[in-house]
Each structure stands twice: as C-alpha cells, then as structure tokens.
Amino acid sequence: MVFAIGICLGFLFRLPSPVAKILSVPCIASFCYAIWLANSRGGILALGATTVFFFVMRAGKIKGLLYGAPLAMAALVFAPSRAGTIAADDESHRAGCCSGKTA
Image (cartoon, rainbow, N blue to C red; front, side, top):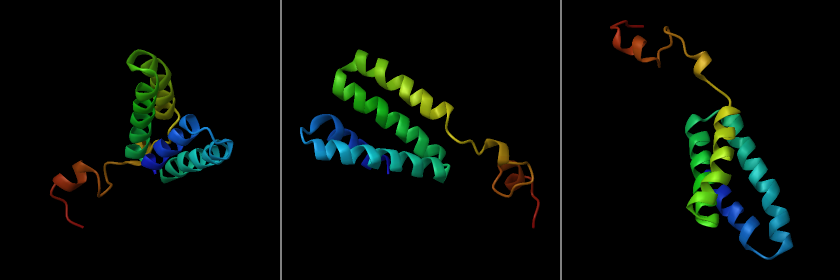
C-alpha cells in the first residue's frame, strides 16, 4: 500500500491531467486509512519514509526535509499504538517465550 501511495503522489504532483489529480486524492486517503486500520507499525514507518523520500526527490534535500519531515512526524505521532496491548503474559512477548514456560 505504501508503494501505491508514492505512485498516487506522483500522479498528484506530476501529471497535468486534472482527472488524474482528482482521482489520486481519494486513493491516497483510502490507502492511508487502510494502513491506519491495519495498525501496522511498519506500515506507518514506511509511510513516513515514503513521504520524506518523495519530498526530497521533488523539492531537493533541504526543502524536502522541511516539507516531508513534519508530515512523517505527524504520521508517527498520530498513528495507532499497539504498545499498550502487549503484556508480560502474552505468548508473543519475549519474556514469555524465553522464560521456559510451557503452555
């Protein structure tokens, strides 16, 4: 999905067709919402990296970082967090796996 967001950003900023620009906005929104619903920490990090990379490639290194970094930070700050749902008795938690307990 993150790869598709990069393609849609390219359509939005580089194509002269107004139809492509109009269609790319809801696509970007739906892909971002899907990453949000998936509650994927890696997806959020990839979304931030894609945003920074896109603006660096579009506007140059300094301006790209000035535009892309705040958007990437906003994605990280407002992202859903699964950290509060991990407990010590969770089987996927390292303490539970390495403590020698058996089910």
